[in-house]
Length: 132
Image (cartoon, rainbow, N blue to C red; front, top):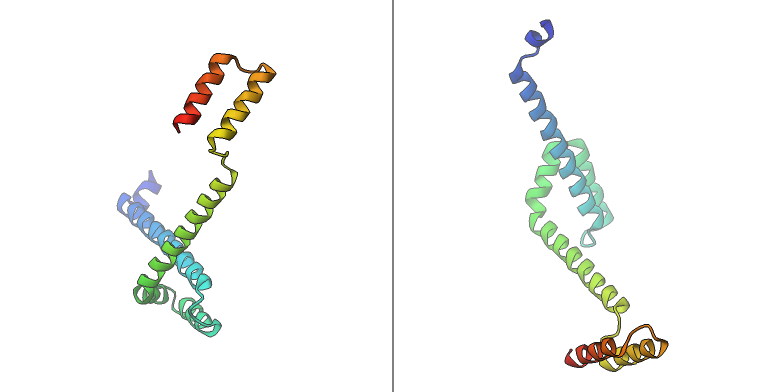
């Protein structure tokens, strides 16, 4: 009972708030540092300057970077996302099966000759391939 009176509920909430604010700040710090290292529009000395500013004045450095570079961060993130989406679409196209109707009918004919499918299934595949 003594422990409950020495650490009241409001102090627990305050401690939780401080902890989660610190976690959010760490997340923003990693985002800023990752953006700095991915940039190709500033020199290495510029990156060193920003890193030094963020290390020497942690909260102020992160917030100044966010204020000064918010538009660039957004543009770089969108460009990365579009590049990844394009790469994924190219990969899917490269591994996707051939959509050629003749190839589908030939494959179905081979399956029919092997006895894997019957005549009705072959006709259904042929109709579907020709309709597409």
